[in-house]
Structures are given as C-alpha cells and as structure tokens.
Amino acid sequence: MTKQMRDESLIGEQEALAAAACLFHGFSDTSRLTIVQHLSLGEHRVVDLVAHLGLAQSTVSRHLACLLDCGLVTMRPEGRASIYALAHPRRRWICCAALNACWV
Image (cartoon, rainbow, N blue to C red; front, side, top):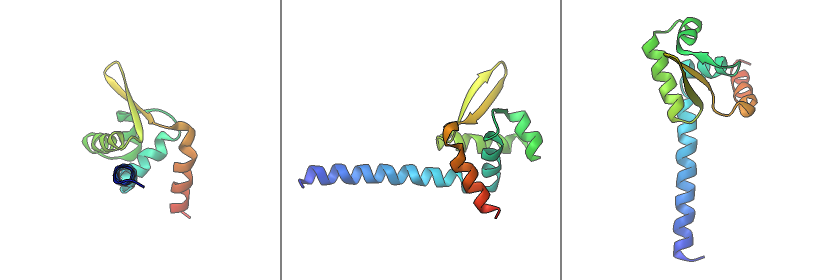
C-alpha cells in the first residue's frame, strides 16, 4: 500500500467517524429522541412538536437545527411554517428499534 493510499484510507475513516459522531450527537439528548419518535409517525410543524413536547418553541427549534445539521431530519417551507420529517423515512425502523430498546 502506498503512502497516498494510506492517507486516503485515513481520510475516509476520519470522515466516517465524524459522520458517526454527528449521528450519535443527534441521539444524545432525550428531547431530540422524542422529536425523532414523533417524526417517525409523519411530518410535523414546529408548533405541533411544541404542543406534543411541552417545550418552548426556541428549545424545539434548537433541537431541530441540531437534527438538521446531523442529517437526521429534513425541513421544507409551507407558507409561514416549516415542516419537518425524518431524512430517511425508510430507515425509521432503526430509530424506532433504538428508541424501543431504551424503554425496555
């Protein structure tokens, strides 16, 4: 293996580790996990999540921004509202399985 190949391999590993760290950061807060759980049921507006969670709008928005940065959720504008959904709805079973394991 050449030095360039080793360097490229290390860069790939570092990128993978950074992605994993970001993912785990997204799941490291119970409020974010609750948001993910709600989004696994379908799209939600911020105001809906605020009502479900009983948290301040600014707190929910901050958690959604983190989940957006981690690539776990998507956002689309609809009028004056923002609609949030899981970024990979086909993989929602992974989130649900992880959440269910936490409550067993």
